[in-house]
Amino acid sequence: MFAPTSLNQVRSVRGPYAATVATVDPDDDSVYRWIVRHYRYDACRRERTHVVVAAFDNPDEFHADIEKRAAELTACEERGDAVDPAEYISGMIHQPGY
Image (cartoon, rainbow, N blue to C red; front, side):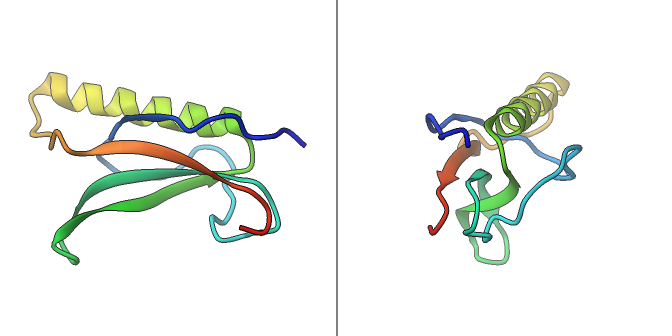
């Protein structure tokens, strides 16, 4: 099995979080999980918080998803949409048993 390498972090993306590739349950601790989180304002909690938006079983899909979300954010900014500068996308890796 491929061992995880590093934590990647880029700016966030707005919009729906439907993944186009197979995902895994971020709480399934029987496998390695590459988890994508969106740091954003949560109106229900009235605070900014990390929201899990996707989880993958390999780093390639993980990195592709982060890059896709960054491109979407750039497109929002270029259109002149209001984008909170505090938002970002981050990634974390959970090993089996964690």
